[in-house]
Amino acid sequence: MDDERGSEDGSTMVESAEIKRTDTMELLKKLKVTVGKDAASIHDHPKIKTLISEEEVAMYSKTIGPDPNAHFNEPSKLSDWCEVNVTRSPLAEDKKSASFISPNETILVDVISHTKHATVSREFLRAGPRELIATDPRHVKAAIVTCGGLCPGLNTVVREVFMALKNLYGVEQIYGIPYGYKGFYEPDLEIRLLTEEFVSDIHHEGGSVLGSSRGGHHTKMICDAIVDFEFNQVYIIGGDGTHRGAIKIYEELKSRKLKASIIGIPKTIDNDIALIDRSFGFDTAVEEAQRAIDSAKTEAISAFNGIGLVKLMGRHSGHIAMFSTLASRDVDVCLIPEVKFVLEGPNVMHSSSQLRQRQGLFAYLEKLLHQKGHAVIVIAEGAGEELLDQSQMTRDASGNVKKTQDVGLWLKGQIVDHFKTTKEDMTLKYIDPTYMIRTVAANASDNLYCGVLGQNAVHGAFAGLSGFTVGLINTYYVYIPMGEISVGRMKVDVHSRMWHRVISTTRQPQLY
Image 1 (tube, rainbow, N blue to C red):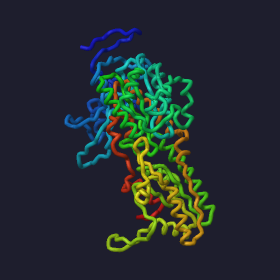
Image 2 (image 1 turned 180 degrees about the vertical axis):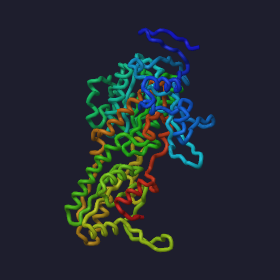
Image 3 (image 1 turned 120 degrees about the horizontal axis):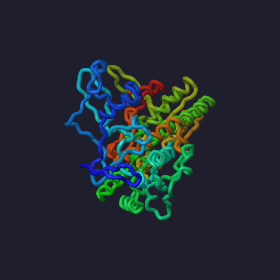
Image 4 (image 1 turned 135 degrees about the vertical axis):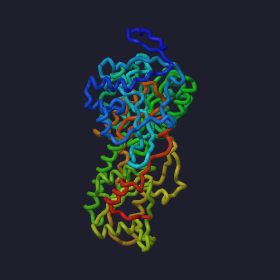
């Protein structure tokens, strides 16, 4: 039996080694009475077959059941290695129980089904507030840190984590860690207490008000600092490299049996983090990149034989280049890391029973200039890697490949030299908006997204989870064990309909 006792403020505290779970069946029964069976909050929950009438069941075409033999990758719980005190969430006092999520609800990853064959899917724990929480908000001391490169929306995430902690759960001690991981232990960097006044307007600013940096990860020193400052919730905002570091922190704190939650919020402007629908800041990046493409188009059509060349972010994947091309619909050639290209051509290749020509980039540019008098090229920073001098490649502080040779400037030089050789008049304007794009404030779409990410990160921490990151899968927010997203990247699938839409829009030939 669990031991119930009164707390200092008169509320009931339940002491248990296991976090109690709200019963989904009872929750749904109560919701139908309080909000009505057609309310949005009802349709936002699982449709439990035993709670639906036979007439309603007949409207559905599939039954999805639990499989006791299936593997469910659930985030770790603090109760796995230390004792927790379970109590009702302060959100319950606002009579908003309709917003509570049962800890048994999951979101399917592989939602495409088949009418004739059985299909399988992965699933992750659904994010959201729980009716029972594992930590007394009065005893929470939280830290927020931003790591890696800048990205639109960083400040919004920081703000919303703070606001959720303070205004939803009543946490008073919320600290900002300066300049990434090294801010935990560098004596010259000050860890500051955050206030509502400080964070209230930061979502209107680009960059990170906390400061950010690459590298600086030292597991023992960071964990020692967490212990010294008595932090028991640490919110880490960063990409796959940052998450690999966060996993080490989580594992070290777990080995010490400390009651401290490590929470990740995935960030990369390249939108190449595995599993999740998209990364925050990506919509803003595409919007800003489109402005650069518009400028390149204007320059190109205003000159005789004008070429506008735009270099966009995308070290390993071409998502920004691809989506910006689709958004602008003014691009003639889109070059991404996933698709090789050559400069010289044409080359003869076999296609079915006949021969056809595969053009090089130079030949295609000449064709475009002869046909319409201008051309617009978008190139991702990781495209054409096989054409660059591999000996000039190094790694940055986060372990990412860093090229000392800029592919945009390299391609500009190659195009200029080619047209000098052919003695054709040509004007090329080169635009690199990289730092302009990543330093702007988030647009409306990303601000909304960042807000929900921040809130759900806090809900997960109070649910007693650790070693997880918050992500969007199939438009639903989920808690993903960090190891799931820190391995591999989401690259552009060149066989996908999305890439085929790019080819349809640009009408570029195969350039390799």
